[in-house]
Image (cartoon, rainbow, N blue to C red):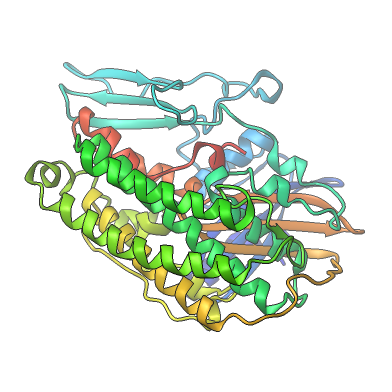
Length: 468
């Protein structure tokens, strides 16, 4: 805890020397002004607070480049200006009631010259995806610059979470990013369950659900990349594998995206032995089918021509932007919440963290394939270890600051809760996609415009998770 932003900056520098990284930063209003809140993670988790005097503070971007994204968000939300931040272009499209001077307009890219053209794309797209605006600066087909503008589907999700802490808000967190319902709900549950005991059976089932969510997301991404590379037969096979997992999800809890089963203190319903056997059988099948599918597609010269080298994100850029999840691991960055800060039953199972050094579309495909294999291994271990027992217990929530972290299919997901007098007064959600969007802007440079859909799909970023 610090007294001012200068002290906060100095504390962050010390933590950086100690191997910690800035994982999240946000502001909150308090009587008489504003506070900046920062979460540093590494071998441990640290929470830092600094008071802002007036409406300006010294930017942290000189020491922590990834802070730029958070500072832009803080400016657009609270009007606090970071002095020294050189990238203050609009982070999100703003509706009139959030308007600040100069924020609502989407600027042209700051690249001009003979033969350079700007291509605006979106925010409405041809597929069933969320709204996002992309502006490409191109010379012919090669991309020289791309800027992303999101926020079109902003819903006020964080504000909706400001309820009595005893109210079960999993119905909201499941919808922060619909295909990451388990990951977001587990992060939320950590903030309200705190140090409460969660029954062992519930912890194992939560872990199984997390890995099933990872599997169907990764299969969807693999199928999407293959489809954009014009291999419809292989794409159809990938979609069949994903559909099988979605149907399995429905047998488990009545919802294809695993909603409605997680609750404060455990689960809303148990999973029968018959269903656990179905999970075991389907998991083993999807493991071998996924390996067979990926082996099939990488034997296609036309496919490999589209994905090798394409959308390369270097290790240095991945570290500088502090990317997370398969995007980071495909660039050689070893970062996974399940290993660094275990939750649910992850401290009781063994798993490897797949890494790939090349950072291209192919690397992200390989990492996802290997993660599916590891997910199956985790599921089978949980099924072997799980025992009969209760699935839910009563939880008493305490006042204070609490953080929840999970490894969603897209990477590190963070929820922060400030609880005072039994009520959540500030809730912060940082979806895994938030720090990865700037990495997409780096990865597409030098690629041709027709390859953007493949690169974009290989990142598998969430619009709704970003547009809170």
